[in-house]
View 1 (tube, rainbow, N blue to C red):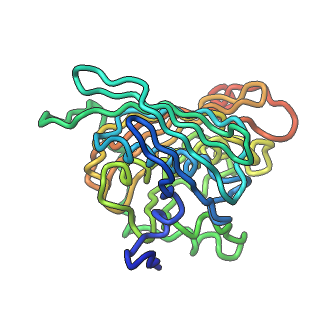
View 2: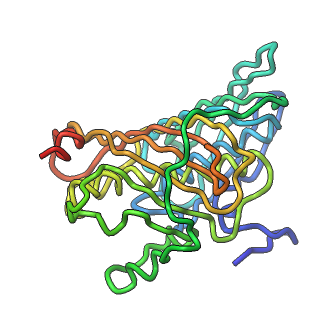
Length: 296
């Protein structure tokens, strides 16, 4: 369902993660964002927080996102937050660095560094290839798989999903620490580069836990996990059009820290981005390398 705001049609994703400009000057901007309850899994999803922070940069710069790193300092609750964005460097080659800080109730909750560059006409080449998986139109929806097994959290209502290895979860028939999933925003995303770049961030953030669960099982103490940091390297942002394939590996759980890496591919087979992240898990301390457990 699309939403009209000031006569302009916005997708649900845009509405959830588009900050409102409060102040703007030479190389800085201040925004307000209102995170709705539907952005929560435990707290507000780290991908939506990252998306909101990334989008503030376009108030200062209309270049192309190249890299984003973000540290999550405090859990962000649904409700209002303030975002301050500052350009800290621009080079003669027109590569710029921005620092973005998010505050809630007066406390610093997240801080990010974002690189952008001026687009040029150059070949787009990557040496990897997209995993060979069924087309999403050939697969069951996640609703048809889990309808009788568990309620669907409001967060997931923003997405259509096709889980490629969902049924392996916890059964150890194929205990690979990997999560492969088609996802797309039900109401689409904006056409500008920052909207496209931010659209992949919730997808990157949510796939680390299910990758680990495919080995450890759904009763593992990692189910409640808070994102500590993400680093995203962007490639072919322009190829984003509808379905996106997330391919995630959970590398290790060590002392309650879950590390993961993920690649996101467009439906056309182009590499959109790759990222790495780390989460702080709930429950008792765990000290095990997932790849070692696969071999057991």
